[in-house]
Each structure stands twice: as C-alpha cells, then as structure tokens.
Image (cartoon, rainbow, N blue to C red):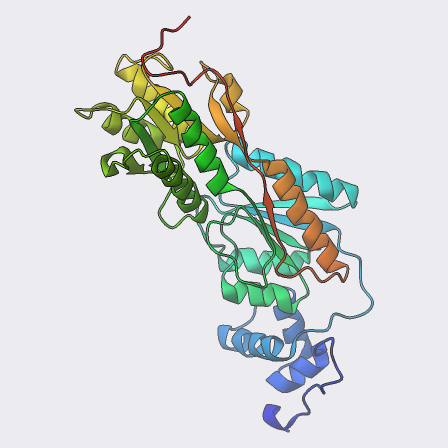
Length: 348
C-alpha cells in the first residue's frame, strides 16, 4: 500500500495523528517517526521533511503514557550582562514554583536559533519554551506546536504573530517619560542613541522621544539621533560623535543602560562631567545603573516580572489552558538619580 492510499486520521481525531498513523502516511517506520518527533539527528533530510509535513498537516498526538515534563526552556541571545540575568531570575522563580528545572540556551548573539537547538529541544520535551527578543523561526514554531510545546516571547524585537503570547514593557511611555524629564530640567538639545532599526522596542522608545519633543514645541534635530546596537561600545562611539558636534547636546537619552554607561565614558574622554556638563538617561534600570558614578537616571522596566509572566503562560498552556495570542504590557517608570540636572548646573 502506498503512503497516499493509507487511511488518514479522521476528523474525530482531534488530538492529532499517532506515531503509527504518521508512519503510515509518510511510508516510513514508527522508529523513524519517533526519531523525528524526539529531535534525533540521524534521519535523512528528505525523510525528516516528509514526516514533518505530515505532522504539520495532521498534528501529533502524544502517547497518553509518559513522564510529566520536568523542564522549562529559556532561549537568550546572550547570557552575559545584567539583562540576561534578570530574565533568568524571573523564569527561574516560576519554574521553582512548579517544580520544574530550567534549561538555558544561549544563541551567542545570533538572532535565530539553529537546527541543533530545535533538535535538542524536541529531545528534551520541555513543558514550554520562553524566548527573549527574537524567537524560533516559523518552521521551528510549527515543530514546537505540533509536539504540544507552547512558546512565549519576552520583550520581542519584532511584532509577534497573532497566535504567539508575549510580554513587554511600555517602551513608548518610557521614551516619553525620559525625554519629558530632560525637557522639564530645561534641556532643549536632547540627543537620542537608539537600538537597531529592526527593533520594535527601539522604535517605540524613539516615537516616545519624538512625541515629547513635538508636544513641547522643540524641533527634532536629525543630527541628534544616532543609531546604535544596545551595547556599551555603541554608547561610547555615538557619544563621542554627538559630543564633538559644533553644537553638541546638553543631554543624551540612551535607549538602554549599557549605552548610557558608554556615554559616560565618552564624556570622560572629552573632559566633561555628568551631570554638570551633560545629563544622561538610560533604559532598563539594571543593577549597573546604581553602581555607576554618578548613579544613572533611567527608565525601569520590570524584566523579572515580564519573564515570570511569560513562563506562567507557557506552563498554563502546557496544562490545557487557552492563552494563545495573550499579550501583556508592563508599565515602565522613570527612576531619577544623580545623572541629570538643569543644563549648566553647578555640581554640589
């Protein structure tokens, strides 16, 4: 009997096709299907593609017997730095509540997980996957979905699909608050160092910055907006560019705390003092903001709570809840410290 002539799962099989049914439809052994389902690498690419096509079309019904998931998977572009540690602590908090172990995958600054990652995740069979900034590809999302492994995004860099749960901070409101704070202090030459143009949080912060200037009647100077990449080196390089302009800014809004520290370094190299000669505002309120000298005025977004909420969502989905497409936006808060002052103010 050819694969096409084998009986397909009926409409009553709402849980998807069994391994045996998938094997029949694909014309392969149940052992081969099991390898694909479990993320094993020792399957020919054409065979894997055929099995994945069947799973995508009919779904996959997990065997009723089997061990309860013991893991939750967290995917980060990089672990180094306080940002990643805040997210890890948030996910771990909820994982411990549910007696789940935490597995952390680092993409080493890559924006998209590779094939080795998805195969490893399918083999581990976690209760769910929490991805930060950028998630799995659409094909990888389909593989997770077909195995009943829910996915949620934290602080997504792009627009999540309508079916994908996500948590984020109020980036527009944070950009607005940061810029209005500087305007109230009397600054009018306010620079901005953004993140990558493709970053949704960066675009929202930039819109907040522009809205604050516009509503205050301050013209937006394109020379004062520099594109960065959310790293300290970006703040240093763009800060040097801005502070050596013929008419330099009196304040800089850096779109994350790492960039803000880079601006501090740029000011120091040029013999300028914060905040006497230059006011600086960051974004995130990571622990480094309080360690900086002077302590950094910044916009706080609750990364731990954002990560914890995304983890609860995937665990609820794994237990049968219907939260697909759930979006949570957390309020941001301006935290005023010692890095901002009126322009030309004497430091005391």
